[in-house]
Image (cartoon, rainbow, N blue to C red; front, side, top):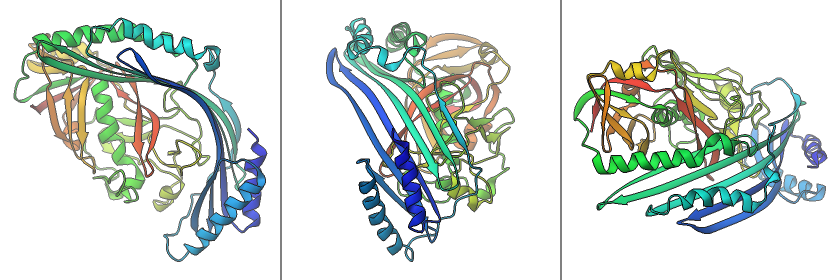
Length: 466
């Protein structure tokens, strides 16, 4: 990348009277495949480069983007954007950024097996080999992608950050039909690393084991018990619940109403810091620094150093996810939560890796203390309202718990609960922390961004099950 163009952009905006300016130069190399019922439906590879530019004129925020990377095109784009922004000075809300420490650093995520060390046919073979083992299934959908992203961020405050992150993603969606009944399953794998993740994921082994368990559930599953019972939710179920009801409502732009028309709002307001909505054993964090995580970064897209944020601490609302403009509204510094999925969109407040911290108990200990309950290993369906209060999770692979032991499979147990109801009902947390990859959507235009969601197994007491 020609980082001189980003430096030129900053100097040009200063010359034009901007009180603040930043430039985000990006270059992405990517490969992708989609396989449906054994047929390659989509395959592609490509590169994309461009420059995202933000600036302040009389406390009015301007944003411009350019993918023709030469100085004359950059100057023309900036001049046009400046004209529009100056016209908006009397019409738009004023923007102020928190004061942050200037940073100068280069970093990269190491690849043990580089993304470009295998050609497309070798990567496609990974999916084809799995598909061959599952030909008896009525529906098989697989997608694979890998991307090497290089970014250079600089601003008028003296920050310059140059970094490289490789990411690999694998997704599957399966449909099993037997005896006029059907069951479906999907899951995402993702990591910031080289191709060494293919071995650690053990895709073929894990998928075949899942298919076997789901067939048993389909053919032998019983209806779940009704009424208030105890539930053990395994890490995947904990993860989706934490992401949707323990992450999204803590995004400050939702809390302040900026995302109301796009992603929704939040039942939380800034006066609720310290309010108890969960039990003492519940602590939820967002941490982009988890090594090789799908949502990994060390500095966000506003040049702020990343760190672990304690969103809920011992059941109490503790901290929000902030960028530089939301944090100053609460007289705080940014906690490094601004992300953009490409150079041509503005960075907005996003989660990274959001999960519940583990406890000290073994999962089996959670089960042993239940007279009648359900163990939900994973889910197929979920939904939640736009203030992140009322939610529903439908189990996929699940089992009856009777007198402290796992018994026969249970079909589609449904948890419908409020966010405080969910976290207040947790009385025990296991030590088996696991992460699950996802692509979280938010913004207008929509930005899908890589994240981890996860946690340990948790025990919920007296929850109504449908």
